[in-house]
Image 1 (cartoon, rainbow, N blue to C red):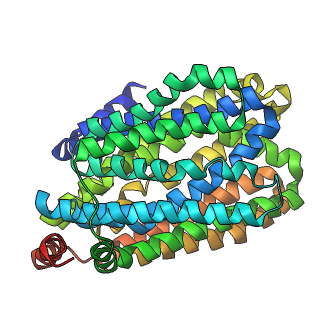
Image 2 (cartoon, rainbow, N blue to C red; image 1 turned 90 degrees about the vertical axis):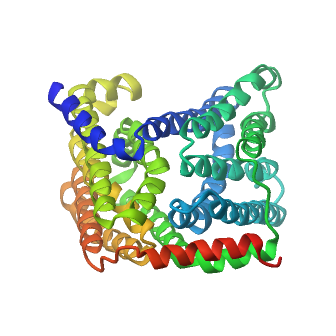
Length: 440
């Protein structure tokens, strides 16, 4: 344990050049965000039962899909292209992106309403509950990203905490009414509080729609299209593999696999928490020195590996007992899945920093290519290994596929290296200034 702590301190020391406090605030922000989403599930399960939770989960899944596409198409390209700009230029791009987020979230709510109206009565109940809250929920994610980009990690974490605080304040009303709409309203009202606070924290107003679309075409589309495609490939492949595994290993084995995955749930906080301040930090460093940006990305990956390895060691020590205590004694037999699933987590964690570097370089095509390699490897490896060795084989197949994807990402990071030139950065600044001061 002492050696692990020493490793964390060494890696953290390398991150001090980018203000390591923002990385600490990133963990605080992501922790608050995860508690908020967990609170929605907990309230729905406790107050509404399994059927109520299932209905709400359908609507929440639509929110996650909209959120993922918004990040890919707008937010991550914004962070990658503007983190190193001067305040005035960043503000111009932020105003344009704010308008796009408002348009995107409104369109998502409109599409969801149309889908519900097309469904038979009662079928879209879980979906319609989220319609009033999509705009504030998606807007809040924009604000937290902007605040971290501007090196205001404490303000970004506060915005996430306000969402949770808003839910807590409304909790007595939720408990007294006990309906599905009030449970989702509790989650949505917290989002509305945080979204309103974001305007006060940033003091940014939307730009004209025409100016915003022009900015998106010039600055976001090049990277955003590849990130959106990568997100869709991952989502589709994951669901296909799960569907096919049911026919190969059965629902009991798949249930055991999901239980072990749930043990690693805290690790789902790790990569988003690192990426929240990490992408702006890598982008800023890249504008100064490609070599320093590369070293920073390696340091971020090293930190993620060390933290993941520490968690895996704890999971191995407590795994079977924890499985039995949380899920029941019948799940103890799936303890052997802990190591392959944990190894897969470590392989993915190692390339966290390099993925941020590729985004900062706007090399979305390389990110998509690595994802396709990993997805094809998953389809090729998981099912044959599952047919031969059962769910253990499937787990090792997923770990190997993650390793292959990581190798592909590393290869793409080293190939086609193009340090950002000062001329290119100046061009970005001129475009941002034109967006702010040009005719609207």
